[in-house]
Length: 431
Image (tube, rainbow, N blue to C red; front, side, top):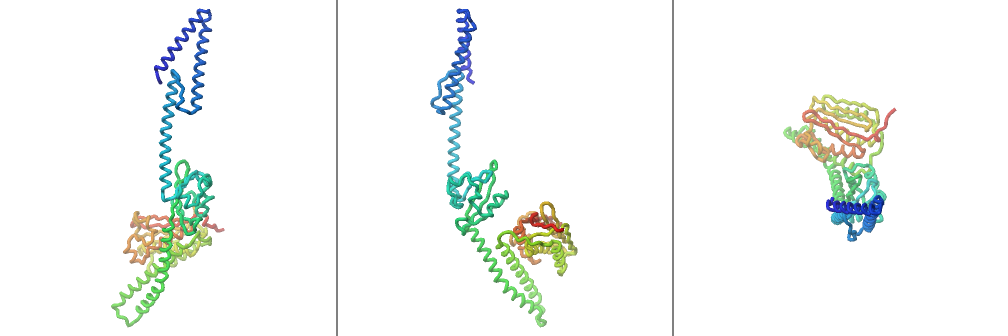
């Protein structure tokens, strides 16, 4: 507040009122003299207000009215605020231009969506990769332009932790990675990348693994057959029996690895969700228990607990393979006097199958990587027990096809629990 301006106004009003009072006394009507002065003052204030409003409506800072007293102070404050606003506005515009230039130069596409998944803005790379046509597509829902079913499910699902890979609608050979990143007040940022090269390399790797595994299967079968025949020859030198047995064991291990690689390749090449065939999990667990007890070496106690009679809807061969891998791992890493327990139960979240063992356990740092191909906690022990390092990778892919997840709980020297979680839509209740 400008004190001199208010003091000047007070002095003027005091003098005007005194003059009005003197004139009123001279004519015998002091109240009328004061009223005239007040009316004149009010008229001047209204005039200043009108001039100020007209100036504000004109929005031309250079035409600021020259007003005295507090009105002049008010005009000066408005001018300062306007110039400060203009400064920040220009600064924000410069930042916005720099942001648009940087996003336009990005090798990846960027699309900004509002909470209703309507397009607000996109850069040139996104327009090229997704086939957007410019301002005409702004305001449209992105599902109306990117219509691949997997992307539509991804947008509506609300789970954006991992990107989704789709084929480009403009070129069937092009693969695009789209990931949604929530930000702000419900807004979404879509990052688009061309992953065609990575997809081709992955396809080549899968083809190579599948072809190599297929070609190795026949020679390994021949080698195993000859080794078995030679080892049964009564005239063979006893000193060669130990090497022959080791050769047979290693060939059997290689055969198991090849079979697991072929199974993994089949799972990776399978598109879409698994079929909805009813599977009696209780009967499957009984069969797995019988197969485990038929082995020459097995844990002392093999228990089965079917807490629910609900059927699991899926592909039986794949489910059998996944459950068998978990049971096989539990048996391999449990001591002869140990225990393995299989359990099946359901709740409001879905169905759950767990395998618990009393084995050596797993250190916490190894658990996140257990489902990677060929990952072994103890490579020496895995080779000794005939492990291929592919069992849990197969389990993960089977569960993905069935909309499920694998959780792992373990404590060193206390055992482990592997649990397969299936969604509720994969269950069928029995009467």
